[in-house]
Image (cartoon, helix red, strand yellow):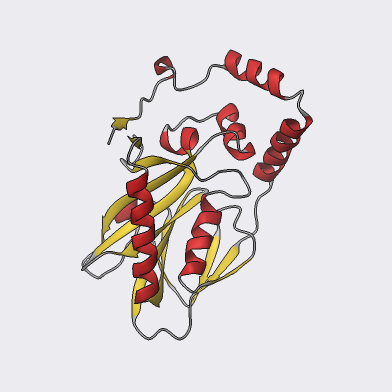
Length: 226
């Protein structure tokens, strides 16, 4: 497994210069399909985004807690992995999420689907009262739901296996020390980190209402912690 820290300066070559960005755009905008993708991405990013709702399962025979955490415009899911232990998973675009390349060019490349997927995994320890909040995650807010134990265990095993398959290329984010692996799944603005979170929550028996474009989710039958 190759684990590399993410360099944080344009001098490393990870951050494309304005000139290279202009050259790339000039070369690709002649393609009408590419131009449409970039236009749709720009429009989607400009929209405020309506809140989407997570309805936790009502009848749970053997409940376990699951935490959904917002990190700005993105969210992740933490599944139980033992007493006071949770494994948190997230999805993003390789350059933007793993390499932490920011700016208009990187944003458009990610949103239009020209980059590659990225999958994160890290361990969290809950507070003595069993909660997870900004102190544990560094996120904006965390919401707790309860789901069936067998479904949570099944999803955790599946996501852990996905992480193991991606061990050839792992980077450690500078901003929060979260390990991120390169992932074969496609990323674009209409199949982003929040859509991945919603898919995982559906696997846990939750009902998702609304379109999870942004991370402004609401939870029904859950417990908030800030």
